[in-house]
Image 1 (spheres, rainbow, N blue to C red):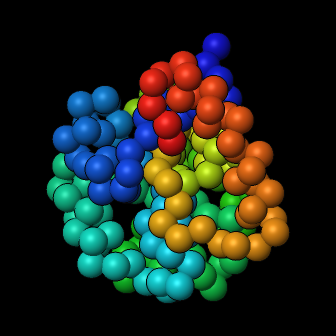
Image 2: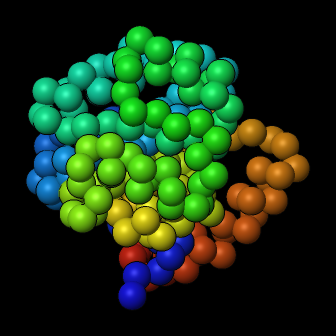
Length: 171
């Protein structure tokens, strides 16, 4: 059994998970966290880099969704011009939002074709593992400095260290 907290892959930026990478691994459906994965908390709408990346994924036939623990105003504004499947208050790490996305595209039975991309071990990686999809991880773009996030990142450190020892790379 794979470690619940280890991603299947770790890359420095969301756009490193390009269409060629995803399709070579059989990924046709990609759910994404928004904040600190695609944009900072300060970016209310997709940046040009995000829009370009999404366009290339779409051209390759990859269906994208946004699953965020942030509120609906945030998620709706981010997704307004795109119209993708999106869920706010997704309650990650619970797998319900990923499962609902898969149902929406008719792929609940073939989860190997789906991945979830995020920046947090205890929400995004764990969500993907519980949902039975491929967890992909990026570092946070600009981490929040609240006590909650500092504690969460401190709790990730031993996991990062074990991952680095086992795989010879750090996330």
